[in-house]
Length: 154
Image 1 (cartoon, rainbow, N blue to C red):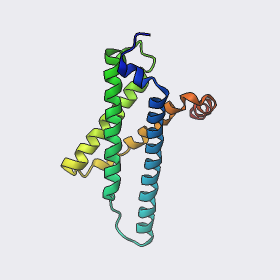
Image 2 (tube, one colour):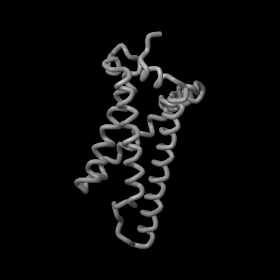
Image 3 (cartoon, rainbow, N blue to C red):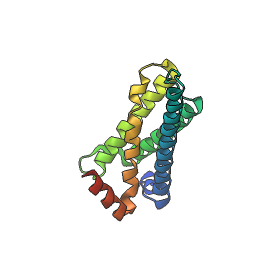
């Protein structure tokens, strides 16, 4: 096959495994972050303390690292596939669009967090849930699990 070096790299098993592992790690991070905030809010409610929208700095740092890593991954895949990445002939176009939207929202959220300290940023954090959807992409190699997920969604 006549593939460029970047195309060969992104099609290797180790690259897909690394990408899948990062997605799973990100899902674990989102779960940890959500649970931490829920426990904190529960404590505040039980003790009649005003709820806070602030999060620990380390959550923002980790979220920023994931955003940058996923942006680099997306950029590398766009570079490898060039215009085919956005082509309707590409069977992965819907995943590519989802990845692009998630990365764009993550980078925008990171920008707001770092530079603007915008109070309504909380609304943008709903996009984190969409990042978890990326786990379905990892399940390509787990046909039974994917069938189970699709049947649950239907």
